[in-house]
Amino acid sequence: MGEAKQGALAGRRIVITRALAQSETLVAALRTCGAEVVMFPLIKIGALRDYGALDDGLKSLREGDWIFLTSQNAVGPVAECGESVCAGLLAERAGIQIAVVGPETERATRVAGLQVHYAAKSHDGVSLARELGERLRGRRVLLPRSDRAGADLPAAVRSFGGEPVEVVAYRTESAAGGNEEAVAIISAGEVDAVVCFSPSAVQELVKRLGSEGIAKLNGVVAFTAIGEVTAKAYREAGVREPLVAGDASVAAVVQALDGHFAGRLGKVLAGEKRS
Image (tube, rainbow, N blue to C red; front, side, top):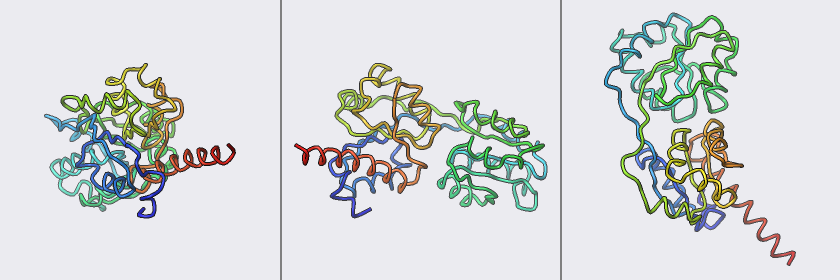
């Protein structure tokens, strides 16, 4: 990535919409590429007061059933509840299978001491269900997710004969307060890209900018989505052509942004040569 320092990202103003604690390596990589990073956290993750539903969901699993971990935020609650409900419930010998979405979630799962039996090739939950396909038939599939999670994943599990067990593992909340300076510069088109990592972040962005504000920035700001599910949320918010990074890894995000701005730079240079 060092080669990109004087390249397409140099001088670009990039807005990151999640907390610095989750974004330190990405921020460092973007700055190494010469970009200016604006931190604008839109959501925060909150713990539950009662994990009884997650406990019950784990207890309901049988040998051969699945747990889908579609966010690293679900890993801690699942690991902790699994141990408290029944020591060894998630051990390899128990026969419960764990599937994950994205390299960060896979890493967090392994660090928590859990076995990963399948990692999705495409980094969203619906694609995970499609990839496993008939392996879900007749199996319960525990879906520990946010309280804002959508209905697409349970529907995909059902379509392959699985029995989705939906439980809330964490809360997604609006970040306290508002960065009025960030709102102002985004609204004025004074940034080059805004990166959202989840549909919830897109929804919060719309709350701050308004639907009309989003619409007028089409073609001005590169609204960047991590994965197709977040891209879908952008489209529903009025973004015609969101930029999509395949996953939340630093390499994928930087590559998507660099490729986008390299393409725009190439068009500008080609136009100058013709004139």
